[in-house]
Image (cartoon, rainbow, N blue to C red; front, side, top):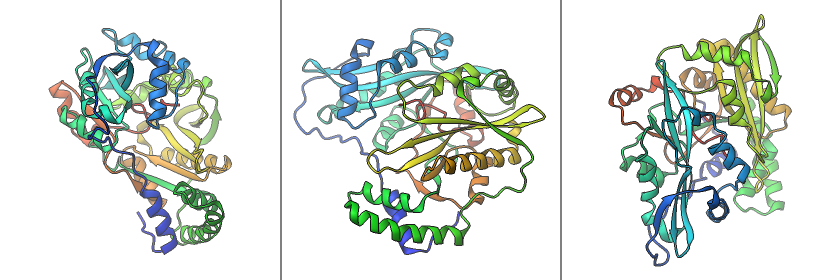
Length: 403
């Protein structure tokens, strides 16, 4: 991936890359009374939502809780009841929470029940006791695969202490991105770091000139050899039989762990009540046959005003590089048409990232890989140690399930 030598661009990227998720402070800020651990209940929603807001996590709504824990297609495959999560109580109130979402995966012809840790939130004074929440998650019975896909470093350390492993798929900790609106991008980065609007505007002009020139010089843009297939957009509710046919062909390909993408699951996954994020499904066909699709997700940062479009899912029969390139290009062009400021790609195997890297993206890296997994099946664990067994991206875990 090409490096930048422009000092202004370099500084902007340094500022963007310096964003770090707050770590879990192991030192209590005040003496904590003994906290009790129990399974979460639907009646806990108001207190849990307040706790999440207090800890800086995205708010939720009760309708979405029903979607995740009552209307989830994976629940039909559960061998026993799956907890919706766990809470810590102290002094008559909830001081800690960890959600637990059931998902269906497939590997080598077998269906696997996975559970995903989500929305880990604990008041600072009780964080030394928060390992109990994660321990409860990993102690579930009847689960084939445990996933934590949005872990900050301290949570990752707890996961590894409880027997989880980092995702072996290469470069999952590195986000590839292209700047679609240099001025908006530059201004938003400065605003995010508290620079006054007037100065941010001036800096945005200088940054825009630098980013534009550097991007042109480095040719940071998509390039595909041909456009031999028809690309069209459909609504989420239109994902039907042709998606089921593609799924059946793809799941029969050997060697990869795949999150379930049957049409019902896809519709459930992205139809999030109350979400302000926009989803666009772009399909690639030849002679009326669906060869692949990409799902583009667009959202705005209310604090900085930065609008980002990211590849939420990409699914192509036979890993065909030509089709992959065409759907990625369609997603890139859709992001530009939506007037997004940045286009991002996180995760995906080598065949996807090679195409992206040829387009000379910028990149930013997490403090460490946010994706951890654990299984008690020794044979499965050995196979999942290989990077080639994974097709991990934002569709996995809770990355694209939240509001």
